[in-house]
Length: 592
Image (cartoon, rainbow, N blue to C red):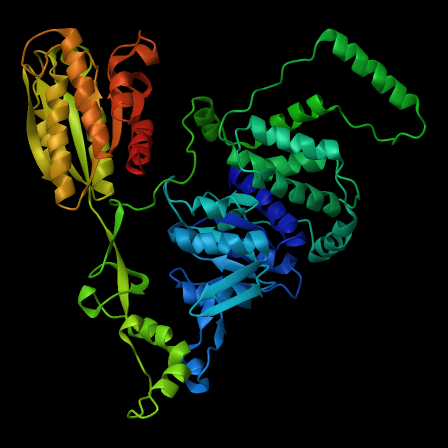
Protein backbone atom coordinates (compact mmCIF):
# COMPACT_ATOMS: atom_id res chain seq x y z
CA UNK A 1 0.00 0.00 0.00
CA UNK A 2 1.85 3.08 -1.22
CA UNK A 3 1.55 6.56 0.23
CA UNK A 4 0.82 7.90 -3.24
CA UNK A 5 -2.11 5.54 -3.70
CA UNK A 6 -3.50 6.47 -0.29
CA UNK A 7 -3.19 10.14 -1.17
CA UNK A 8 -4.94 9.56 -4.51
CA UNK A 9 -7.83 7.80 -2.79
CA UNK A 10 -8.09 10.49 -0.10
CA UNK A 11 -8.23 13.20 -2.78
CA UNK A 12 -10.80 11.27 -4.79
CA UNK A 13 -12.96 10.76 -1.69
CA UNK A 14 -12.77 14.46 -0.86
CA UNK A 15 -13.68 15.27 -4.46
CA UNK A 16 -16.71 12.97 -4.27
CA UNK A 17 -17.99 14.88 -1.24
CA UNK A 18 -17.39 18.28 -2.85
CA UNK A 19 -19.04 17.26 -6.09
CA UNK A 20 -22.08 15.74 -4.37
CA UNK A 21 -22.80 19.11 -2.72
CA UNK A 22 -23.47 20.78 -6.11
CA UNK A 23 -23.54 18.07 -8.78
CA UNK A 24 -25.70 19.39 -11.62
CA UNK A 25 -24.28 21.22 -14.65
CA UNK A 26 -20.79 20.02 -13.73
CA UNK A 27 -19.07 16.67 -13.51
CA UNK A 28 -16.14 14.38 -12.80
CA UNK A 29 -13.69 12.66 -15.11
CA UNK A 30 -12.53 9.50 -13.35
CA UNK A 31 -9.53 7.79 -14.96
CA UNK A 32 -9.46 4.20 -13.75
CA UNK A 33 -9.81 0.71 -15.11
CA UNK A 34 -12.92 -1.27 -14.16
CA UNK A 35 -12.32 -2.76 -10.74
CA UNK A 36 -12.92 -2.51 -6.99
CA UNK A 37 -11.37 0.96 -6.61
CA UNK A 38 -13.61 2.53 -9.24
CA UNK A 39 -16.68 0.72 -7.94
CA UNK A 40 -15.90 1.88 -4.40
CA UNK A 41 -15.64 5.50 -5.53
CA UNK A 42 -18.93 5.32 -7.43
CA UNK A 43 -20.61 3.77 -4.38
CA UNK A 44 -19.21 6.55 -2.19
CA UNK A 45 -20.52 9.20 -4.57
CA UNK A 46 -23.92 7.50 -4.66
CA UNK A 47 -24.07 7.63 -0.84
CA UNK A 48 -23.21 11.33 -0.83
CA UNK A 49 -25.78 12.33 -3.45
CA UNK A 50 -29.28 13.43 -2.48
CA UNK A 51 -31.94 10.72 -2.77
CA UNK A 52 -33.65 12.51 -5.67
CA UNK A 53 -30.45 12.59 -7.79
CA UNK A 54 -29.93 9.01 -8.99
CA UNK A 55 -27.17 7.87 -11.30
CA UNK A 56 -28.01 6.57 -14.77
CA UNK A 57 -25.64 4.93 -17.22
CA UNK A 58 -25.51 6.13 -20.81
CA UNK A 59 -24.51 3.76 -23.63
CA UNK A 60 -21.32 4.51 -25.54
CA UNK A 61 -22.62 4.51 -29.11
CA UNK A 62 -25.84 6.47 -28.94
CA UNK A 63 -27.54 8.09 -31.90
CA UNK A 64 -28.71 11.69 -31.85
CA UNK A 65 -32.38 10.72 -31.93
CA UNK A 66 -31.87 8.64 -28.78
CA UNK A 67 -29.71 11.25 -27.06
CA UNK A 68 -31.73 14.37 -27.93
CA UNK A 69 -35.09 12.89 -28.83
CA UNK A 70 -37.02 13.20 -32.05
CA UNK A 71 -40.00 11.84 -33.83
CA UNK A 72 -41.74 8.86 -32.24
CA UNK A 73 -42.24 6.98 -35.49
CA UNK A 74 -44.83 4.41 -34.41
CA UNK A 75 -46.89 6.95 -32.43
CA UNK A 76 -46.74 9.44 -35.29
CA UNK A 77 -47.98 6.86 -37.81
CA UNK A 78 -50.80 5.84 -35.48
CA UNK A 79 -51.88 9.40 -34.68
CA UNK A 80 -51.40 10.84 -38.14
CA UNK A 81 -49.55 13.84 -36.68
CA UNK A 82 -46.01 14.43 -35.36
CA UNK A 83 -45.48 12.96 -31.89
CA UNK A 84 -42.23 13.78 -30.08
CA UNK A 85 -40.11 11.19 -28.30
CA UNK A 86 -38.08 12.27 -25.26
CA UNK A 87 -34.33 11.77 -25.52
CA UNK A 88 -31.91 10.51 -22.89
CA UNK A 89 -30.72 14.00 -21.91
CA UNK A 90 -34.18 15.30 -21.10
CA UNK A 91 -35.09 12.02 -19.41
CA UNK A 92 -32.03 12.50 -17.20
CA UNK A 93 -33.14 15.95 -15.97
CA UNK A 94 -31.92 16.16 -12.37
CA UNK A 95 -29.92 12.95 -12.77
CA UNK A 96 -26.20 12.10 -13.01
CA UNK A 97 -25.22 10.49 -16.30
CA UNK A 98 -22.44 7.92 -16.03
CA UNK A 99 -20.53 7.65 -19.32
CA UNK A 100 -18.70 4.34 -19.62
CA UNK A 101 -15.54 4.31 -21.77
CA UNK A 102 -15.68 8.08 -22.11
CA UNK A 103 -12.34 8.10 -23.94
CA UNK A 104 -14.19 6.53 -26.88
CA UNK A 105 -17.06 8.99 -26.80
CA UNK A 106 -17.64 10.65 -30.14
CA UNK A 107 -17.00 14.36 -30.48
CA UNK A 108 -20.57 14.98 -31.64
CA UNK A 109 -22.11 13.23 -28.62
CA UNK A 110 -19.71 15.10 -26.32
CA UNK A 111 -20.86 18.38 -27.87
CA UNK A 112 -24.51 17.52 -27.23
CA UNK A 113 -23.80 16.59 -23.61
CA UNK A 114 -21.66 19.71 -23.19
CA UNK A 115 -24.49 21.92 -24.44
CA UNK A 116 -26.81 20.39 -21.83
CA UNK A 117 -24.20 21.02 -19.12
CA UNK A 118 -23.87 24.65 -20.22
CA UNK A 119 -27.54 25.54 -20.62
CA UNK A 120 -29.47 23.08 -18.49
CA UNK A 121 -31.77 22.49 -21.44
CA UNK A 122 -31.71 21.26 -25.02
CA UNK A 123 -33.20 22.71 -28.17
CA UNK A 124 -34.68 19.95 -30.31
CA UNK A 125 -35.04 21.07 -33.92
CA UNK A 126 -35.32 18.00 -36.14
CA UNK A 127 -37.83 15.76 -37.91
CA UNK A 128 -40.28 18.65 -38.23
CA UNK A 129 -40.18 19.29 -34.46
CA UNK A 130 -39.10 22.42 -32.60
CA UNK A 131 -39.02 21.92 -28.83
CA UNK A 132 -37.09 23.14 -25.80
CA UNK A 133 -36.71 20.63 -22.98
CA UNK A 134 -35.10 20.82 -19.55
CA UNK A 135 -31.89 18.84 -19.14
CA UNK A 136 -30.04 19.87 -15.97
CA UNK A 137 -27.67 16.96 -15.63
CA UNK A 138 -24.40 16.02 -14.02
CA UNK A 139 -21.79 13.84 -15.71
CA UNK A 140 -19.41 11.20 -14.40
CA UNK A 141 -17.10 10.28 -17.27
CA UNK A 142 -15.36 6.94 -16.70
CA UNK A 143 -12.05 7.19 -18.54
CA UNK A 144 -10.56 3.74 -19.18
CA UNK A 145 -7.76 4.95 -21.46
CA UNK A 146 -4.27 3.58 -21.00
CA UNK A 147 -2.18 6.03 -23.01
CA UNK A 148 -1.89 9.80 -22.72
CA UNK A 149 -3.64 10.28 -26.05
CA UNK A 150 -6.65 8.21 -24.97
CA UNK A 151 -8.75 10.85 -23.27
CA UNK A 152 -12.39 11.93 -23.40
CA UNK A 153 -13.12 14.71 -25.90
CA UNK A 154 -11.75 18.10 -24.89
CA UNK A 155 -15.20 19.71 -25.17
CA UNK A 156 -16.43 17.36 -22.45
CA UNK A 157 -13.38 17.58 -20.17
CA UNK A 158 -13.53 21.37 -20.22
CA UNK A 159 -16.96 21.25 -18.57
CA UNK A 160 -16.09 18.73 -15.85
CA UNK A 161 -14.79 20.29 -12.64
CA UNK A 162 -12.85 17.31 -11.28
CA UNK A 163 -10.22 15.32 -13.17
CA UNK A 164 -9.36 12.36 -10.94
CA UNK A 165 -6.93 9.49 -11.48
CA UNK A 166 -7.28 6.17 -9.65
CA UNK A 167 -5.14 4.17 -12.08
CA UNK A 168 -2.62 3.25 -9.35
CA UNK A 169 -5.17 2.67 -6.59
CA UNK A 170 -6.05 -0.91 -5.69
CA UNK A 171 -8.79 -2.28 -3.46
CA UNK A 172 -6.29 -2.41 -0.57
CA UNK A 173 -5.94 1.37 -0.71
CA UNK A 174 -9.67 2.01 -0.34
CA UNK A 175 -10.35 3.34 3.15
CA UNK A 176 -13.43 4.70 4.88
CA UNK A 177 -13.83 8.44 4.45
CA UNK A 178 -14.27 10.63 7.51
CA UNK A 179 -17.11 12.63 5.96
CA UNK A 180 -20.59 11.18 6.17
CA UNK A 181 -23.63 11.58 3.94
CA UNK A 182 -25.16 13.73 6.69
CA UNK A 183 -22.17 16.11 6.55
CA UNK A 184 -22.56 16.46 2.79
CA UNK A 185 -26.32 17.01 3.07
CA UNK A 186 -25.79 19.77 5.66
CA UNK A 187 -23.20 21.42 3.41
CA UNK A 188 -25.66 21.24 0.49
CA UNK A 189 -28.19 23.23 2.51
CA UNK A 190 -25.56 25.72 3.69
CA UNK A 191 -24.28 26.31 0.14
CA UNK A 192 -27.14 28.72 -0.56
CA UNK A 193 -25.71 31.21 1.94
CA UNK A 194 -22.01 30.91 1.00
CA UNK A 195 -20.47 34.00 -0.59
CA UNK A 196 -17.08 34.66 -2.16
CA UNK A 197 -15.39 38.08 -1.86
CA UNK A 198 -14.53 39.77 -5.18
CA UNK A 199 -10.79 39.64 -4.48
CA UNK A 200 -11.02 35.86 -4.09
CA UNK A 201 -12.71 35.56 -7.47
CA UNK A 202 -10.08 37.80 -9.06
CA UNK A 203 -7.35 35.64 -7.54
CA UNK A 204 -8.81 32.50 -9.14
CA UNK A 205 -8.91 34.17 -12.54
CA UNK A 206 -5.32 35.42 -12.15
CA UNK A 207 -4.11 31.96 -11.08
CA UNK A 208 -5.76 30.36 -14.11
CA UNK A 209 -4.06 32.88 -16.39
CA UNK A 210 -0.64 32.23 -14.83
CA UNK A 211 -1.15 28.50 -15.38
CA UNK A 212 -1.83 29.12 -19.07
CA UNK A 213 -5.49 28.06 -18.87
CA UNK A 214 -7.41 29.84 -21.60
CA UNK A 215 -10.90 28.53 -20.85
CA UNK A 216 -13.07 30.76 -18.68
CA UNK A 217 -14.95 27.69 -17.47
CA UNK A 218 -11.97 26.69 -15.31
CA UNK A 219 -12.14 29.62 -12.83
CA UNK A 220 -15.95 29.40 -12.80
CA UNK A 221 -15.78 25.71 -11.88
CA UNK A 222 -13.05 26.45 -9.35
CA UNK A 223 -15.32 29.03 -7.72
CA UNK A 224 -18.09 26.44 -7.41
CA UNK A 225 -15.66 24.01 -5.77
CA UNK A 226 -14.38 26.73 -3.40
CA UNK A 227 -17.95 27.51 -2.30
CA UNK A 228 -18.63 23.80 -1.79
CA UNK A 229 -15.45 23.48 0.29
CA UNK A 230 -16.51 26.45 2.39
CA UNK A 231 -19.95 24.94 2.98
CA UNK A 232 -18.41 21.58 3.87
CA UNK A 233 -16.29 23.32 6.53
CA UNK A 234 -19.39 24.94 8.02
CA UNK A 235 -18.57 28.52 6.99
CA UNK A 236 -20.44 31.19 5.06
CA UNK A 237 -17.54 33.13 3.53
CA UNK A 238 -14.95 31.60 1.20
CA UNK A 239 -11.44 31.71 2.65
CA UNK A 240 -7.94 31.11 1.34
CA UNK A 241 -8.05 27.44 2.33
CA UNK A 242 -11.10 26.90 0.13
CA UNK A 243 -9.38 28.55 -2.82
CA UNK A 244 -6.38 26.25 -2.37
CA UNK A 245 -8.69 23.24 -2.47
CA UNK A 246 -10.34 24.52 -5.64
CA UNK A 247 -7.02 25.27 -7.32
CA UNK A 248 -5.70 21.80 -6.51
CA UNK A 249 -8.76 20.03 -7.89
CA UNK A 250 -9.73 22.22 -10.85
CA UNK A 251 -6.85 24.39 -12.05
CA UNK A 252 -3.80 22.17 -11.44
CA UNK A 253 -4.92 19.29 -13.73
CA UNK A 254 -5.63 21.82 -16.48
CA UNK A 255 -2.25 23.60 -16.27
CA UNK A 256 -0.66 24.25 -19.65
CA UNK A 257 2.55 25.97 -18.54
CA UNK A 258 4.61 25.58 -15.40
CA UNK A 259 3.64 28.12 -12.75
CA UNK A 260 6.37 30.45 -11.58
CA UNK A 261 7.45 30.02 -8.01
CA UNK A 262 6.57 33.59 -7.08
CA UNK A 263 5.55 36.77 -8.80
CA UNK A 264 7.65 39.88 -9.14
CA UNK A 265 7.61 41.90 -5.89
CA UNK A 266 6.01 45.35 -6.01
CA UNK A 267 8.13 48.52 -5.94
CA UNK A 268 9.30 49.60 -2.54
CA UNK A 269 7.20 52.80 -2.55
CA UNK A 270 4.05 50.88 -3.40
CA UNK A 271 4.81 48.40 -0.68
CA UNK A 272 5.07 51.20 1.88
CA UNK A 273 1.76 52.67 0.70
CA UNK A 274 0.12 49.26 0.93
CA UNK A 275 1.50 48.78 4.43
CA UNK A 276 0.16 52.16 5.58
CA UNK A 277 -3.23 51.38 4.05
CA UNK A 278 -3.30 48.02 5.81
CA UNK A 279 -2.49 49.74 9.12
CA UNK A 280 -5.34 52.21 8.62
CA UNK A 281 -7.76 49.44 7.78
CA UNK A 282 -6.68 47.41 10.78
CA UNK A 283 -7.36 50.38 13.07
CA UNK A 284 -10.89 50.81 11.67
CA UNK A 285 -13.30 48.95 13.98
CA UNK A 286 -15.80 48.57 11.13
CA UNK A 287 -13.44 46.33 9.19
CA UNK A 288 -13.87 42.56 9.21
CA UNK A 289 -11.83 40.96 11.98
CA UNK A 290 -10.47 38.40 9.54
CA UNK A 291 -7.76 40.09 7.50
CA UNK A 292 -7.23 38.67 4.01
CA UNK A 293 -3.88 38.86 2.18
CA UNK A 294 -3.49 41.37 -0.62
CA UNK A 295 -4.26 40.28 -4.18
CA UNK A 296 -0.64 39.73 -5.22
CA UNK A 297 0.15 37.59 -2.18
CA UNK A 298 -3.05 35.60 -2.70
CA UNK A 299 -2.11 34.97 -6.34
CA UNK A 300 1.24 33.59 -5.21
CA UNK A 301 -0.42 31.35 -2.63
CA UNK A 302 -2.80 29.89 -5.21
CA UNK A 303 -0.06 29.33 -7.78
CA UNK A 304 2.04 27.60 -5.11
CA UNK A 305 -0.97 25.41 -4.28
CA UNK A 306 -1.34 24.52 -7.94
CA UNK A 307 2.35 23.70 -8.22
CA UNK A 308 2.10 21.39 -5.21
CA UNK A 309 -0.95 19.63 -6.69
CA UNK A 310 0.63 18.95 -10.09
CA UNK A 311 2.28 15.48 -10.26
CA UNK A 312 6.09 15.68 -10.51
CA UNK A 313 6.25 14.04 -13.95
CA UNK A 314 3.64 16.40 -15.38
CA UNK A 315 5.36 19.37 -13.76
CA UNK A 316 8.64 18.44 -15.45
CA UNK A 317 6.88 18.24 -18.82
CA UNK A 318 5.21 21.59 -18.23
CA UNK A 319 8.54 23.20 -17.40
CA UNK A 320 10.02 21.93 -20.67
CA UNK A 321 6.92 22.84 -22.67
CA UNK A 322 6.02 19.23 -23.45
CA UNK A 323 2.63 18.90 -21.83
CA UNK A 324 -0.18 17.97 -24.12
CA UNK A 325 -2.37 20.92 -25.03
CA UNK A 326 -5.42 18.72 -25.02
CA UNK A 327 -6.49 15.28 -25.96
CA UNK A 328 -5.11 14.41 -29.31
CA UNK A 329 -6.85 12.38 -31.94
CA UNK A 330 -7.91 9.13 -30.37
CA UNK A 331 -8.09 7.22 -33.61
CA UNK A 332 -5.39 4.61 -33.76
CA UNK A 333 -5.31 4.68 -37.51
CA UNK A 334 -5.60 7.49 -40.00
CA UNK A 335 -8.04 10.29 -40.50
CA UNK A 336 -11.71 9.50 -40.91
CA UNK A 337 -13.66 9.98 -44.11
CA UNK A 338 -17.32 9.56 -44.92
CA UNK A 339 -18.46 6.76 -47.20
CA UNK A 340 -21.82 5.64 -48.54
CA UNK A 341 -20.99 1.93 -48.59
CA UNK A 342 -18.86 0.80 -45.65
CA UNK A 343 -17.67 1.77 -42.20
CA UNK A 344 -19.45 2.73 -39.00
CA UNK A 345 -22.98 4.15 -39.45
CA UNK A 346 -23.01 7.89 -38.77
CA UNK A 347 -26.59 8.98 -39.41
CA UNK A 348 -28.34 9.50 -42.71
CA UNK A 349 -28.71 12.11 -45.41
CA UNK A 350 -31.16 12.85 -48.19
CA UNK A 351 -30.28 11.08 -51.43
CA UNK A 352 -31.34 8.85 -54.27
CA UNK A 353 -31.47 5.06 -54.00
CA UNK A 354 -28.51 4.57 -56.34
CA UNK A 355 -26.25 6.72 -54.12
CA UNK A 356 -25.97 4.28 -51.27
CA UNK A 357 -27.77 2.07 -48.78
CA UNK A 358 -31.35 3.06 -47.92
CA UNK A 359 -32.01 3.83 -44.25
CA UNK A 360 -35.56 2.57 -43.88
CA UNK A 361 -36.22 3.97 -40.40
CA UNK A 362 -34.95 7.44 -41.28
CA UNK A 363 -36.94 7.37 -44.52
CA UNK A 364 -40.11 6.61 -42.58
CA UNK A 365 -39.26 9.36 -40.10
CA UNK A 366 -38.98 11.84 -42.95
CA UNK A 367 -42.28 10.73 -44.43
CA UNK A 368 -44.31 10.50 -41.21
CA UNK A 369 -45.10 14.23 -40.64
CA UNK A 370 -46.63 14.48 -44.13
CA UNK A 371 -49.03 11.54 -43.99
CA UNK A 372 -52.22 13.47 -43.22
CA UNK A 373 -51.60 15.96 -46.04
CA UNK A 374 -50.66 13.26 -48.53
CA UNK A 375 -53.75 11.20 -47.75
CA UNK A 376 -55.93 14.20 -48.56
CA UNK A 377 -54.06 14.74 -51.83
CA UNK A 378 -54.39 11.07 -52.83
CA UNK A 379 -57.90 10.38 -51.60
CA UNK A 380 -58.87 8.65 -54.85
CA UNK A 381 -55.81 6.37 -54.95
CA UNK A 382 -55.55 2.94 -53.41
CA UNK A 383 -55.02 3.21 -49.63
CA UNK A 384 -51.47 2.61 -48.43
CA UNK A 385 -50.17 2.29 -44.90
CA UNK A 386 -47.44 4.90 -45.49
CA UNK A 387 -47.13 7.28 -48.42
CA UNK A 388 -43.46 7.76 -49.30
CA UNK A 389 -42.07 10.22 -51.86
CA UNK A 390 -38.63 10.36 -53.45
CA UNK A 391 -37.77 13.38 -51.27
CA UNK A 392 -38.19 11.17 -48.20
CA UNK A 393 -35.41 8.76 -49.13
CA UNK A 394 -32.55 8.81 -46.64
CA UNK A 395 -29.17 7.21 -47.37
CA UNK A 396 -27.03 5.86 -44.54
CA UNK A 397 -23.71 7.66 -44.03
CA UNK A 398 -20.74 5.61 -42.90
CA UNK A 399 -17.54 6.76 -41.28
CA UNK A 400 -14.52 4.90 -42.59
CA UNK A 401 -11.09 4.94 -40.98
CA UNK A 402 -8.24 5.64 -43.35
CA UNK A 403 -4.91 3.94 -42.79
CA UNK A 404 -1.95 6.12 -41.84
CA UNK A 405 1.34 5.75 -43.72
CA UNK A 406 4.31 7.03 -41.72
CA UNK A 407 7.09 8.06 -44.12
CA UNK A 408 10.50 8.16 -42.43
CA UNK A 409 13.00 10.34 -44.29
CA UNK A 410 16.48 9.63 -42.91
CA UNK A 411 19.65 11.64 -43.41
CA UNK A 412 22.44 9.08 -44.05
CA UNK A 413 24.99 11.62 -45.26
CA UNK A 414 28.51 12.02 -44.00
CA UNK A 415 27.73 14.90 -41.64
CA UNK A 416 24.99 12.89 -39.98
CA UNK A 417 26.83 9.57 -40.07
CA UNK A 418 29.90 10.97 -38.36
CA UNK A 419 27.83 12.59 -35.68
CA UNK A 420 24.70 10.71 -34.75
CA UNK A 421 23.48 8.21 -37.35
CA UNK A 422 23.51 5.39 -34.81
CA UNK A 423 21.43 7.46 -32.41
CA UNK A 424 19.04 8.37 -35.21
CA UNK A 425 18.61 4.68 -36.06
CA UNK A 426 17.78 3.94 -32.45
CA UNK A 427 15.20 6.71 -32.38
CA UNK A 428 13.62 5.44 -35.58
CA UNK A 429 13.33 1.92 -34.15
CA UNK A 430 11.38 3.35 -31.23
CA UNK A 431 9.12 5.24 -33.60
CA UNK A 432 8.65 2.17 -35.79
CA UNK A 433 7.44 0.20 -32.79
CA UNK A 434 5.04 3.00 -31.95
CA UNK A 435 3.69 3.02 -35.51
CA UNK A 436 3.26 -0.75 -35.37
CA UNK A 437 1.20 -0.39 -32.18
CA UNK A 438 -1.03 2.16 -33.94
CA UNK A 439 -1.40 -0.19 -36.93
CA UNK A 440 0.26 2.31 -39.27
CA UNK A 441 2.08 1.39 -42.46
CA UNK A 442 5.68 2.61 -42.60
CA UNK A 443 7.93 3.62 -45.48
CA UNK A 444 11.64 4.40 -45.35
CA UNK A 445 13.50 6.95 -47.50
CA UNK A 446 17.24 7.54 -47.14
CA UNK A 447 19.27 10.27 -48.82
CA UNK A 448 23.05 10.40 -49.13
CA UNK A 449 25.63 11.12 -51.79
CA UNK A 450 23.81 12.75 -54.71
CA UNK A 451 20.40 11.07 -54.56
CA UNK A 452 17.65 9.64 -52.41
CA UNK A 453 16.44 6.05 -52.33
CA UNK A 454 13.16 4.50 -51.25
CA UNK A 455 14.57 1.68 -49.15
CA UNK A 456 11.18 0.39 -48.08
CA UNK A 457 7.81 1.00 -49.77
CA UNK A 458 4.82 1.28 -47.41
CA UNK A 459 4.53 -1.91 -45.35
CA UNK A 460 3.26 -3.13 -42.01
CA UNK A 461 6.22 -5.46 -41.51
CA UNK A 462 8.13 -4.10 -38.53
CA UNK A 463 10.87 -6.74 -38.85
CA UNK A 464 11.52 -5.84 -42.49
CA UNK A 465 11.72 -2.14 -41.65
CA UNK A 466 14.23 -2.83 -38.88
CA UNK A 467 16.41 -4.94 -41.19
CA UNK A 468 16.51 -2.22 -43.83
CA UNK A 469 17.32 0.37 -41.19
CA UNK A 470 20.15 -1.68 -39.69
CA UNK A 471 21.74 -2.16 -43.12
CA UNK A 472 21.58 1.56 -43.93
CA UNK A 473 25.10 2.82 -44.75
CA UNK A 474 26.28 6.35 -44.02
CA UNK A 475 28.51 8.81 -45.80
CA UNK A 476 28.61 11.24 -48.71
CA UNK A 477 26.82 14.50 -49.39
CA UNK A 478 23.46 15.70 -48.09
CA UNK A 479 20.91 15.91 -50.95
CA UNK A 480 18.09 16.99 -48.64
CA UNK A 481 15.90 18.23 -51.51
CA UNK A 482 16.03 14.79 -53.16
CA UNK A 483 14.93 13.15 -49.92
CA UNK A 484 11.98 15.50 -49.56
CA UNK A 485 11.03 15.03 -53.22
CA UNK A 486 10.98 11.25 -52.75
CA UNK A 487 8.86 11.66 -49.63
CA UNK A 488 6.48 13.91 -51.56
CA UNK A 489 6.05 11.23 -54.23
CA UNK A 490 5.30 8.60 -51.58
CA UNK A 491 2.82 10.93 -49.86
CA UNK A 492 0.96 11.60 -53.11
CA UNK A 493 0.86 7.86 -53.83
CA UNK A 494 -0.54 7.17 -50.35
CA UNK A 495 -3.21 9.82 -50.83
CA UNK A 496 -4.31 8.24 -54.10
CA UNK A 497 -4.76 4.93 -52.26
CA UNK A 498 -6.99 6.58 -49.67
CA UNK A 499 -4.32 6.60 -46.96
CA UNK A 500 -3.25 9.45 -44.66
CA UNK A 501 0.47 10.25 -45.04
CA UNK A 502 2.58 11.32 -42.06
CA UNK A 503 6.12 12.60 -42.69
CA UNK A 504 8.91 12.17 -40.12
CA UNK A 505 12.19 13.80 -41.18
CA UNK A 506 15.40 13.09 -39.26
CA UNK A 507 18.32 15.25 -40.40
CA UNK A 508 20.89 17.78 -39.28
CA UNK A 509 19.59 20.10 -42.00
CA UNK A 510 23.04 20.86 -43.47
CA UNK A 511 22.15 20.32 -47.12
CA UNK A 512 25.11 20.63 -49.53
CA UNK A 513 23.89 18.92 -52.74
CA UNK A 514 21.26 20.69 -54.86
CA UNK A 515 18.69 19.11 -57.17
CA UNK A 516 21.13 19.06 -60.10
CA UNK A 517 23.64 17.06 -58.05
CA UNK A 518 26.08 19.97 -57.74
CA UNK A 519 27.67 20.88 -54.42
CA UNK A 520 26.86 24.19 -52.76
CA UNK A 521 25.19 24.85 -49.43
CA UNK A 522 23.22 27.99 -50.35
CA UNK A 523 21.56 26.52 -53.46
CA UNK A 524 21.05 23.15 -51.75
CA UNK A 525 19.23 24.79 -48.86
CA UNK A 526 17.03 26.80 -51.24
CA UNK A 527 16.11 23.61 -53.10
CA UNK A 528 15.33 21.88 -49.80
CA UNK A 529 13.10 24.77 -48.69
CA UNK A 530 11.30 24.66 -52.05
CA UNK A 531 10.70 20.92 -51.62
CA UNK A 532 9.44 21.55 -48.08
CA UNK A 533 7.00 24.16 -49.36
CA UNK A 534 5.72 21.63 -51.88
CA UNK A 535 5.04 19.24 -49.00
CA UNK A 536 3.23 22.06 -47.22
CA UNK A 537 0.96 22.35 -50.24
CA UNK A 538 -0.12 18.73 -49.75
CA UNK A 539 -1.47 19.62 -46.33
CA UNK A 540 0.06 16.60 -44.64
CA UNK A 541 1.22 16.31 -41.04
CA UNK A 542 4.98 16.48 -40.57
CA UNK A 543 7.61 16.27 -37.85
CA UNK A 544 11.23 17.40 -38.28
CA UNK A 545 13.71 15.93 -35.78
CA UNK A 546 16.98 17.89 -35.70
CA UNK A 547 20.00 15.61 -35.25
CA UNK A 548 22.56 18.44 -35.44
CA UNK A 549 24.90 18.91 -32.46
CA UNK A 550 23.96 21.73 -30.07
CA UNK A 551 25.19 25.18 -30.97
CA UNK A 552 22.81 27.08 -33.22
CA UNK A 553 19.81 28.93 -31.88
CA UNK A 554 16.52 27.29 -32.71
CA UNK A 555 15.47 29.97 -35.22
CA UNK A 556 18.81 29.73 -37.09
CA UNK A 557 18.89 25.94 -37.31
CA UNK A 558 18.40 24.74 -40.92
CA UNK A 559 16.11 21.93 -39.78
CA UNK A 560 13.90 24.45 -38.02
CA UNK A 561 13.61 26.43 -41.25
CA UNK A 562 12.68 23.23 -43.09
CA UNK A 563 10.02 22.46 -40.47
CA UNK A 564 8.54 25.94 -40.84
CA UNK A 565 8.55 25.70 -44.63
CA UNK A 566 6.54 22.46 -44.60
CA UNK A 567 4.34 23.65 -41.69
CA UNK A 568 5.52 20.81 -39.48
CA UNK A 569 6.54 20.40 -35.87
CA UNK A 570 10.19 20.77 -34.83
CA UNK A 571 11.99 18.65 -32.25
CA UNK A 572 15.61 18.86 -31.15
CA UNK A 573 17.38 15.52 -30.95
CA UNK A 574 19.62 16.00 -27.88
CA UNK A 575 16.60 15.81 -25.57
CA UNK A 576 14.47 13.59 -27.79
CA UNK A 577 14.08 10.54 -25.58
CA UNK A 578 11.74 7.69 -26.41
CA UNK A 579 8.71 9.11 -24.64
CA UNK A 580 9.16 12.53 -26.17
CA UNK A 581 9.58 11.18 -29.69
CA UNK A 582 6.51 9.01 -29.31
CA UNK A 583 4.49 11.94 -28.00
CA UNK A 584 5.68 14.18 -30.84
CA UNK A 585 4.67 11.62 -33.47
CA UNK A 586 1.22 11.30 -31.89
CA UNK A 587 0.88 15.08 -31.92
CA UNK A 588 1.94 15.25 -35.56
CA UNK A 589 -0.51 12.48 -36.45
CA UNK A 590 -3.36 14.47 -34.90
CA UNK A 591 -3.02 17.21 -37.50
CA UNK A 592 -0.70 19.83 -38.93
